Length: 97
Image (cartoon, rainbow, N blue to C red):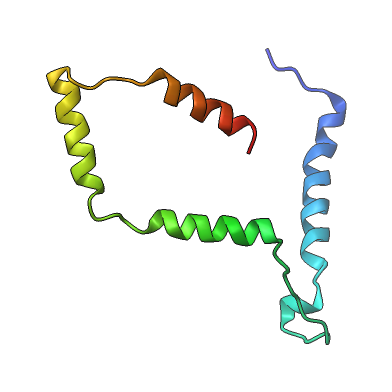
């Protein structure tokens, strides 16, 4: 059974008209024409801080792998203890920063 609405013949025509109108709208910048205007970007102080933090996080620490391996070993031996006071302090401080 084939269902066809009489208005469906206009849908493809509408899409082709929309595509052709999109290709006709060209800005001077797309053709390399200079308009005398220049773009500029200003970053906020928070953004600059975040960039510094991100760059610092990308720098590997020398003894980081040693610490991780030591933690893994103590967990495997069952000697690693959790300090709930430190965890609570870190959680509370994260809300007030």
